[in-house]
Length: 248
Length: 215
Image (cartoon, rainbow over all chains, first blue to last red; front, top):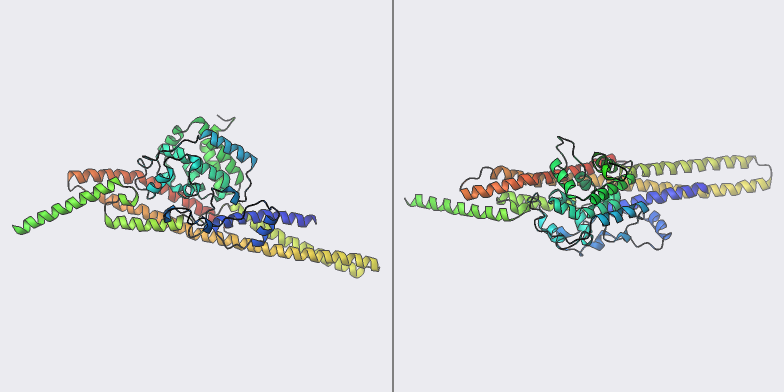
């Protein structure tokens, strides 16, 4: 019976991982049985929100959230309990990035003339605090990070950091965000350019730098064997570790 | 004389149209900031495709972590091993039963065999589920690789639309006003290039994770 219990536990954790995969990936639900079994043991959980449920709630075709990304504005739809350490980091994030209205004027003036979604993205930003932003849209449009001016990157950064913290390896913005936060090696031709990285760091307060470091560390700990977690560790080692408590 | 005037008027009208196109382009962002209609419409159509392939509408654009594949595979192996162990246990019990000398002993072992068979049945169901999990994972990874490949292609195509426009604006000098607007556009295209490159790198990184996640 002990063996059965062990196997059930293994199945539950694997079913969870694939459940997440199904939510984000939109794969045919092979796991109905396992997921039902898991859900039946937790009656308080919300039913899975399917992508089709989200359609129509947004504006134009390009403004619509992707069909294979969960509606991250409603975290109850995602079976991923917040770890206590993550809750503390999230608090740190909120404290470091105050909820101030974002003015979108000039958001793409410096680097974003060729960003095709500059106008709708700017419209989404206008007058909202980072916590009020349509998270699904903003996370889907993580490519904007490469085109926003530094001041506006700082303004929206907490949305992407929060997504990385809460959605982990399934955040569609994960690769873009970690690339943005990785200090480039001299002469490196891909990724963010050094002057842009340095401008970003200069624009951040000490508390914001520490919050970014805390998010990267918390995320890296959740993906110890994966390459995205490895890239987060690289970003920490190249720069952000210095802002963690006890480092200099 | 009439031909000369007509030609001069035609050139002047063309130049005015071009100036208007350039003024419009400078005032806009994205594909609309390309003053050449052919490059602009190419950029727009590539951009539509980019949304389709990069936003998740076509399927998954992330594979999560390589660790998921490993866990799914390990789980299948563990379940298979568990069933094998249960079968061995049943076989040993059957041997014991055949050697048992009393009815009490036979009945007791018989009950153990019955329990082992139930456990095997449950174990086989778990193996079946674990195999389905692995198939699900494989499908997600294969889908994501296919989709990310196209996402990267369309990102490059959009970037190349601006690169082509950049090449062309470099040579614009018909009038001082056009030359000035062309210079502004050239600077903007050059400043925006790294944004496209960053996104291509990010998507290639996602692609690399997926390739490493193949079961």
